Image 1 (tube, rainbow, N blue to C red):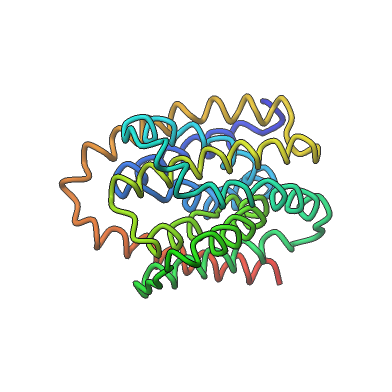
Image 2: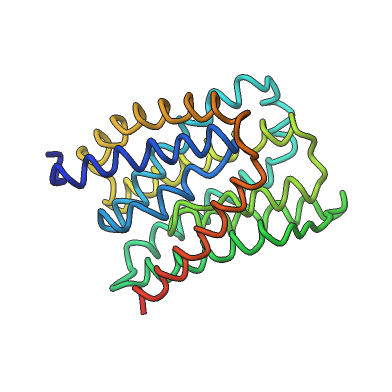
Amino acid sequence: MFGVDLFALTSVFVIFFIAGSVKGVLGFGLPLITMSLLPFIVPVELAIVLSALVQPATNIGQLISTGGAKQAFKSTWTILLALVPSVAIGAWFLSALEGNSHLLILGLTLIAFSIYSISGFVFSITKERQNAMGVFTGFVAGLVGVLTSINGMFFIMYLVGIGADRKAFRAAIALLFIVSGVLINSGFWFAGLLNQNNIIIGVLVLIPCFLGMWIGNRIGDQIPNELFRKMILYALLVIGCVFIWRGI
């Protein structure tokens, strides 16, 4: 069905439901969960494409609800500008990768994100350096986003570094995910990695994904969020090590 066997397709739906639930509880983490679990079921290239397809759709509502799109653009325009060439370069790298290189890159990215989040490290970005750091952040996030579909770590580091408050953070991160998702999917299309079957599956998995987000939002108040967050991060750390082992 759509080029994927029924067991794998069912598993993909379950994984997106789980990922949506985690996002509903924590407010982030959808591509982290999908990219941690999907490569055990489907080829890593398909996992990257599906995660990238879903990412923009799940953030549109968040951007609208904040009402801060204009301010979000002002604080992130340098990142958005740098995303364009970096995504193009990343798409070329992705089509040229061979063997288990995808798993190695994915594993290293998961480990880096987990360690950064667990450590609680924060660095400050002065106003004088915001433009330069924005360009650097956008370029790195574009490359890593195409290769792994996980680029949120770089956006988070930048927004925390400039001292964005909660509302500004939610608006900016949603805008960045939407724009980077559209650019990344365009790169996949030109690289020949996006086809009709992938798009159909990507649209269908939005159903369990949004259902999971709805349930996650409802049960979020009943779960100690910090404990849940750390459990997820330590699990991602282990999974990252597994991917590196598989890649090697």
